[in-house]
Length: 359
Image (cartoon, rainbow, N blue to C red; front, top):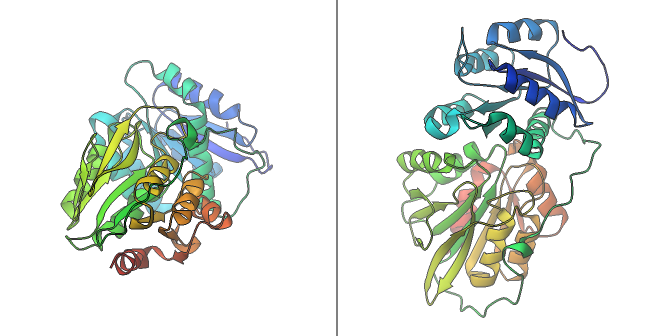
């Protein structure tokens, strides 16, 4: 039955063929005071009937379902009556190509659920699930402000201490560090496709599940002139190469002599994320300083805002994506508020600005 309450809570429709997953998601989402579950459906046809009666603010959607698969339903929804969708599927690991297609078709975010132990996983990922739904709602409602503040977060101190900035001689070779979250997969594609094959070396943190970043990097590598790969520990950062931080691992920029490389490691969540943009940016501030250029793109929350301020203090040039081209303006907005940004640009102009400032 559809709940007809008229308060300002985010109204969510849960669509999954597993009764256990539906029940767990309903319990998790209902526990958040800013979220109301308006209905649950076992297949797209049942979901369509609910939507005919009352349109949800956000829908969580499985990919593997009877009668109609989630991708087909997603395409139909986006063509007929667009609704912010969060994919909750076990295919993000084994079928990452399918998950990438979901993002292309319009899904706002993806939560990877394991094939076994799904109930426990979802319960442990409560914050992640609720945040994904809230980000999806903001992507639709733009400047709508949620009443509840985010829970306390750990800073980059738990992975890398701020310390003092190393005295680094300015060189002709710059290194670019980029942070993105919700909406970042498409933003990064636009940005990277505009770069020439000899663009400065780059390290990117895009908030993504484990095992998903490898497929994301492979697809970008096929579409872009620069070489793109999922970062591995000790990978060298050089011209024409882009390294994507692997899901569930922090990625830091380091320097040995004239060589920049990455350190990939486990560690606590920072700003509620692993990998964290703050961790990457702080390491770049310390080891690259004025040789770095920082870019912060679309995403919910404030991961990267503190780090990009440190980059600016270290002499790096900093850029933020503007509100008009962001899916969610949270991360860039917070970085701007804290005074860490020197240039605010539409997505399509960021690549050109990066290249000009790296000369």
